[in-house]
Every structure is written in C-alpha cells, then in structure tokens.
Image 1 (cartoon, rainbow, N blue to C red):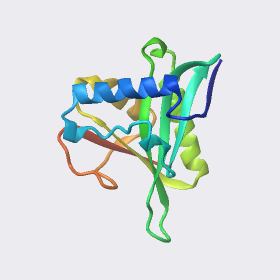
Image 2: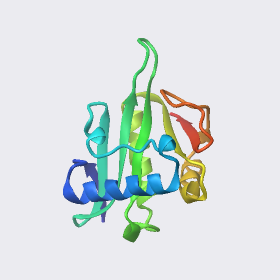
Image 3: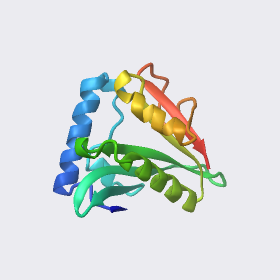
Image 4: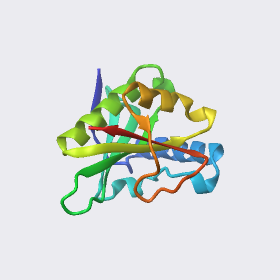
Amino acid sequence: MIHIDRDDPARADVHQLLSEHLADMYATSPAESVHALDHSALSGPSITFWTARDEGELLGCGALKLLDAAPGSAKHGEIKSMRTTAGARGRGVATLMLRHIVGEARSRDCGRLYLETGTEEYFAPARRLYARNGFTECPPFADYALDPNSVFMELHL
C-alpha cells in the first residue's frame, strides 16, 4: 500500500531522486528555464516536502511551497518537485501525490495553487496530469517571468 508522509529531502534515496530530477531538467530545458529546487532549497521554512513509499521503497516525491501573500489577501501555494521514480511510473503515484498536495493546500486555506512546468514534449505527461486534475494555464505568478520554455498553471481552491 502506498503511503504519503512528510520526509527529509536530504535523506539518501530522496537526495538521489532529486539529483536525477535536476539532471533531467537541465538536460531537457535551457539552464535559465530550470526552476526545480535542490534538496537544500526544499528544506526551506516555506516548503513542506513529502514522499510516497510502499513498504519503505521510495516511489515519488512532491512539495508545497507557500507563496508570500499581501496582508489581508488569500494565501497561495506552489507545487514543487513532483517526481516519480522510473520503476513506479504507471502506478498512479503522481496522481496520489498531486491530490495529497491539493488537499494540504486546501487545509491551509490557500486560495490558489500554482505550478510551473516545461513546454517540451518530455513534460507532456505532467501537463496532462495537471489538466486532468483541474489545473488551467495562467500567466506567470510570483517571481516567474514569461518564458517560452515554461507553462504556468493554476487551480482555484
């Protein structure tokens, strides 16, 4: 059975998965268009990080970054570092992780949940996953700038 729990991005198997993720991002996108975070950045105070495991085996990870909100305005969140291990693809891990993050964002009274992903064919499965779960394209958010290598998406919660 797959369990999703808070975890440490510096944990050895997680660190390896995140390193693979970063390597794939740099192999797929120009360096200036890579917005993936390394394990130390994912340990920041505004980020909650989870892993999906089955009997201790790492299957995937994902994070929720709370975005700065103006006083009196609704909080917003950003999905970061969604990644499934190669061996776990096709098992529904990404959908479970995404639903977990959406649920967490709702429980924290976020008004919107955002994400950035790539435009290349490599990212097509991710874009389909997000669209199937109600995300729609939107303009750049937070500190992002318009980038032909990025697709920005949002979900109204």
